[in-house]
Image 1 (cartoon, rainbow, N blue to C red):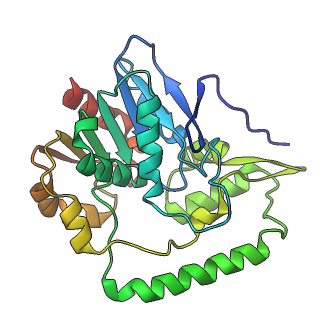
Image 2: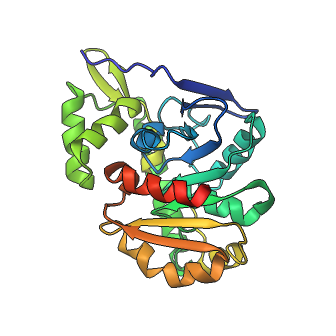
Length: 288
């Protein structure tokens, strides 16, 4: 039987609205980096990076519904903007102000939107394979809303059914590696925190609603208005084999971020895992 155990550097914050877990590397007297993971990942995604940032504390949280954090109550659809409230409450609860906020993918989306809205609360910003909130044409609004309602109605009728159980973690690791192209060792690291024992096998710890479509997405005009005039020093790191849309959007990002440092380095969408040394070097140079 496979068993998931919380690592020794497990940390927990009881926020006013939800319990958030995470991992903390480094001594208390070192500067703090706050690390925010991507969709369906968890705090373990920053373990490779933390190994190369020994001059810092690295606090990586699990977003609600991920890893060891609590799921949002109820069974209603999830909204990306709720993560902004999580982040704001977490920053209030921290004993020291992070010298930089580091966000990958979804974590970077939330960090950039938060920085645009509350620049006085952020010292420096590091975006890894992320730029801004996602957007789509307003003509897609009705279809998105209908699809989201359909998926959630189906979820509610099936939530008491038999959840998918795997014989062991190896099967799930191979499935994620095949689906995403992420190397199996990194898939295993992530799944060790997103899965849990279920009888004689293992099942998902993460909130199943994370896999359902959200009912609403911003238009580009809304995103563009939100992201204007960001004066916080910002480091953007893209993987050469990462999401090509991000590299295409860099010219637009230069109009949003007034102090932007851009780097495209070897690696895929999880460049902070498969090229942790390269990303850590850029962060050290940026934060010092």
